[in-house]
Length: 406
Image (tube, rainbow, N blue to C red; front, side, top):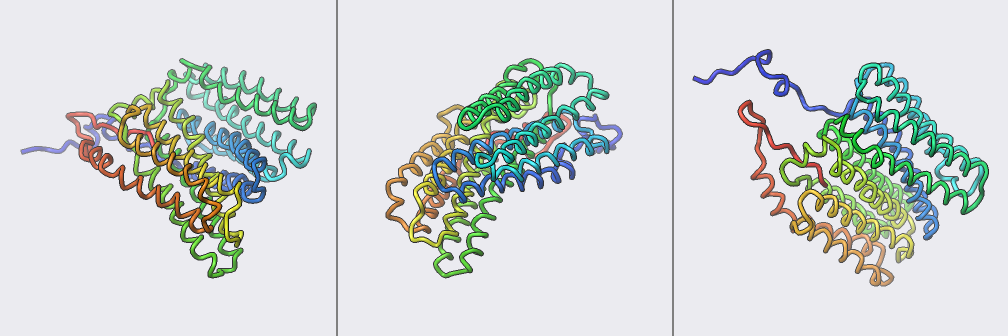
């Protein structure tokens, strides 16, 4: 007869529950919801190439701030009161970013407020790492690299804000942002010395993706409210809802890669960098699509303005292409899901010449239909993955973890 060992007799790796997002992390996400919303509102509020470029550029430091807090928590968070207080101060600075995002590029005070808030939010991460060193000495190398690099980029941000004007200011901001994004690549081995929890990291990126898709839902809902539930807005609203559902389904139905990739993500290195940085265009594409879709529903016009059309179709294509390339880094570029997504992205872009002749509902429904076709075409590959993945962890053999690529 088979006996079941008690919890005390089982090895710690088997007894331990999976790491999940804490309630405080979810509170932090609420703060970022407000900031993401202000960014997507710029897309609809300034439907032009320049307005879209500005919104996309401002999304990057916001996204990077979220990544810094998420990765720090993934590697060392003990969820103690002192850490919550430090993080709360940093999140207050994120609120400052949200307040000033709308005025950046139009007002010196907004430019200054945004940069100061951003640097204070980053200082919050540095303070958290400094506190973590009391219990995690292994973090010393990565903390040193982070503080040194951040000090250099902070000087560039401040110099550009107070000493430069116009294109020179924003070009220098871009240089500072590029240097910050390069810091993890320059850290190299330091990241491998501080492995994190891969499942928790996947969950956090999934939650942020939900936040950005949620802005799409909020956008077209507000559009319907502004249209005062006019009959002409019903079909565009339904099409926008179908587009949001298709984006969600596409991202969350494709979470499988080759066995072992999950553990490689936890160990850092190339796969971690591809997964993290690959989510920047993924989530930027979602933000552009959502902001433009909401504005398109609210316009009440017969056709979608060209800048908004470019955001809806370009954002959807960017999302599909980025998810395909992140997945390809784990499975290979010839894998069926990768090919399907790249073909679908090309088909979405081919809609651009047709949109001047389509009504608003048609412009939103066409990419939604292509997303639905892509999801259906990918289904056999996802079913094969589910059949080959072990159902449960046992004490005799390790479980193959779910893989991280979208």
